[in-house]
Amino acid sequence: MTATNHILEIKEYGQSIWMDNLSRDLVESGDLKKLISTQGLRGITSNPAIFEKAIKGNKVYDADIETGIRAGKSLLEIYESLIFEDIRNACDIFLPIYEESGGLDGYISIEVPPTIANDTESTISEARRYHREIGRPNVMIKIPGTAAGLPAVEQMISEGVNVNVTLLFSVQSYVNTAWAYVRGLEKRAASGEDISKIASVASFFLSRIDIKIDEKVDATLKKGVDQIAQEAKLKAIKGKIAIANAKIAYQEYKKIIADPRWLALKEKGANVQRLLWASTGTKNPDYSDVMYVDELVGADTVNTLPPATIEACVDHCDVAPRIETGVEEAYNLVNSLQDPDININLAEVMEELLDEGIDKFVQPFEALMASLQEKVDRLAAVS
Image 1: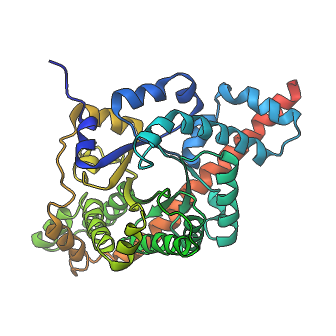
Image 2: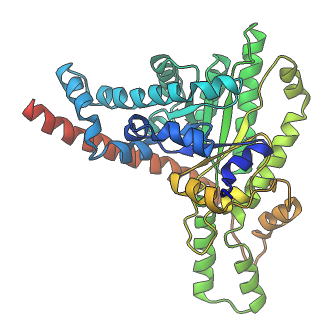
Image 3: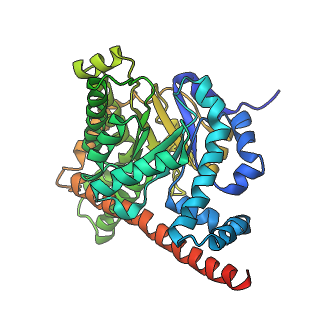
């Protein structure tokens, strides 16, 4: 008897599994193609941290770096030539999935430079340029769901560019994102353009929320609490808030797709903007390594998993459509943060996470540019 691959079961419930990883080795070795056929992968997400890991200290990029040096390219142009090439090749590998799914899946996400997260005009011009230069129908441009990012999301959707809205932590930030998508589609439809070929996902982050909340709980417990009841309340929320938050976001998604504004767009062939669960690698060894998969399987969603979580899920995910189970408990859990015994301000936590999230992409981007500069200097000296 062959063992069940639990990732393949997930698709039956209307969820697509994408992978949060990309490197040239993965493409050139044939491993990416193998993951599609054996693990049922339906797309790829990337970010500056992933590219830093892929390029730093990896000789597979050296020949292209040398070509860039000889062509007199700037450091940024060399960087872009490397990552655009990887994205194009991955897009080509996933094109059959894009076509077979009617444009639902098969996307490769690439993020605009994280250093411009709070600059609307730069985000628009970079998203436009990335889309044009990569030149693949199944590329998805990642734009942060910041106050400055959302007008760029709306504009790109109105221009027919596929967008992955990233760094969403609060339910309200997801709702704002969903309406930016709707406005973009409305604008495009009003100008008589086709809206049936546009896809978008809203990347809702998970594990970082639990890390942040758990830190606050542990700090309170460390100070010491007077009553057993308070200790029990604090312990009851550990490792639970991210999934509760995601389940509440899904309820908001259901409200949006029942709204007359959305239904009017659906009539014109618009595709729903799916919620994508991001940051799904469990950081705390005390928790299940697949908890952000098992608890959030449901229709019209995507889960983007790091390679280790894919392996874990293939082996021991317990697949069932749980996105709409325990919804009342999810609301109660989130509301319990306001209890004086717990006293955690969720809105503040989400703001902190957004600021840190941008920083978590800026730092590896800058580290990558520094290591690339070292490599350019070294290769220029011997070429």
